[in-house]
Amino acid sequence: MFKILIAEDDADLRDLFKKILIQSGYAVLGVSNGKEALDALDKEYFDLIISDIMMPVLDGYELVRSLRESGNNIPVLTVTAKDAFDDMRMGFLSGMDDYMVKPVNLNEMVLRVGALLRRAQIINERRLVIGNTVMECDSLTVHSNGESMVLPQKEFMILYKMASFPGKIFTRQQFMDDIWGYDSESDTHTVDVHIGRLRDKFKNNPDFKITTIRGIGYKVEK
Image (cartoon, rainbow, N blue to C red; front, side):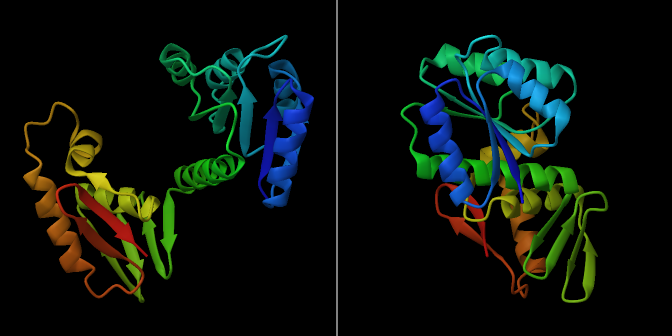
């Protein structure tokens, strides 16, 4: 069971978040400020933090900054009444992973928590499982139906990126920026070439398919 730490000085809101997350199957501890959050992290392991920004003693910015400076990469979802771009920018610069503005849509919060936990698990394990297909980052290998295939690095990265977020559409430019790099002189047509090769290699794979979204980009569907 995943364990979530909530740092929120509004007791009613903290209790509401806690109730919703427990109903969603998580173990939850609530604290009232950033210092109490750090103390709790010293005593036990948590998989994710939900943190307010404006808190007494130690605010959300300082909490996240302290974690990152100590090498702690625990996912942090920041929840705050502040909605100005500069506040959001400061939050991301301090090291937060996601951001929600109060009043919070509780269903959306649960979805964001799940997405952050999946992303962290994928990064930590460096492997991804879809049905009977296993993708291993360290060896660039895809195992499926009793067979293994080592892919060229960029093909593997494209497939792994899409498969990490089934149903999410990625544009050609996103692939170019994230995989080839911002300073690459290649054009976006090279993405189409790599997608074509992936489709040919996995055309008989029953666990996923690569779908073209005309005029936008590509996605993996289970």
